[in-house]
Image 1 (cartoon, rainbow, N blue to C red):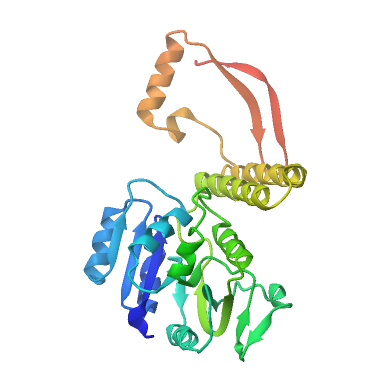
Image 2: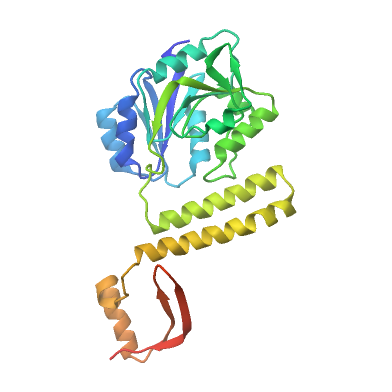
Length: 305
């Protein structure tokens, strides 16, 4: 086997700030497929200009991480697919060490993962080594960097199409282990993960991220556990996520007051005031938000002088 037998697959979503560092770090694997969930035609043009051999797919709809990777798997022509997040950077010799592992006789694997600063060494306590100490058999790996045997992944149905974001790789690993498939970590193949830098972050992003995280957690546990236990287990976590969103909202609104003329579109503000002048009654909730408390008062009538 050589580098011609490997394709790199990258799913992007508003990832222009990080994707070029990732591409620059790929030195030996020449086949690259990028599937863009944000339908960014300008990013496609930039990447095609710098990396003309890269296959760039624009998606009119955000398919989520797992389903986008499923599309890459279908397009992949090589035996192995190296799935990467756009916010990863390969360290020197990462590709070389992974190829060495592929060429080890009798090493039958479904997933081969490089090591990063995010690797949870606590999860490796009950694992076993394969011939050398740099190859460790593990139960699961993080989804930001996985070299997969394409046929073995396709055989179990690829990524679960019901999971939009989060835990899709854990679900994949779970199904592979149930089929007695092997997952290895190569401790000599190193990668840097920037973590949560692959997309622009704002309140809407934070809200969506927490929603998808909780939905995926509930779905995953319902899939493999008792439904009643899942419900009891996740009620406190659901409350915690709600509080996190409130806290995030407080932080971005710290020391700010809402003023129609300054904080929203001017034309909208004019129309709003015209409506008040015409006698339209607007009811608001008297709410005070700050970092120490949330006070929700009574309904009040909004007046315009």
